[in-house]
Length: 293
Image (cartoon, rainbow, N blue to C red; front, side, top):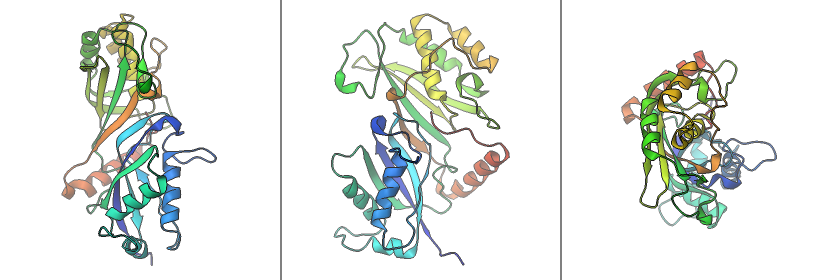
């Protein structure tokens, strides 16, 4: 009989610049690889180390301030967190242990660790994800300190046109024009929010929210918006491109460095299990598109 485990939720932030994405890959440095290596160190005396399940797998160069993952601990692993911890031990101690192994200058940080509510699944219980993308156009000087987190664009962009075009794309659609195709995968998603704002420092920031994203979707939406802001295509053209449901070369996919996962949303605790069952059943019926954006 399998040993009963306790599920923990981790809230994670990372600078994606020097990572080859989230998912573990042989011989490459990834966020999952770094964290699971640290977990193996923490629990090296207590059986096989736990593995992580993440809300959204991010591509190489993509950052996160609000990533969520879960892992399952055996009773012995959970009890071991009480040892040598003078701040109460238990589930919160795991974040401190992992951050201690990573070091103060690390590019990954576990903001918190806690026992998850019953039915919680970091990936399948999620109801939405929010990403932001930063673009600095020719209206402001370039800041070299932001080069790994902001796209520099050499022309002036029309933020109002970009915002109007973004709003016109909202809703449930087939996003084949904005996603890299994968055999057997669905590209039908609900785009819940897509807006552009020019902030006080002059940087244009896109906020994009959907129930889930198919591969390269956010960066394609950003690239298409930039083409609208430059005047290369119009709002109506963008809608027509979406409805054509075919990949296009009319716009360029934006690079990863300006993209950050900032938040993952979940339903009330009493709905977590049913949400996970519904999502898992839907994705089992139609194999899911890669989560990376």
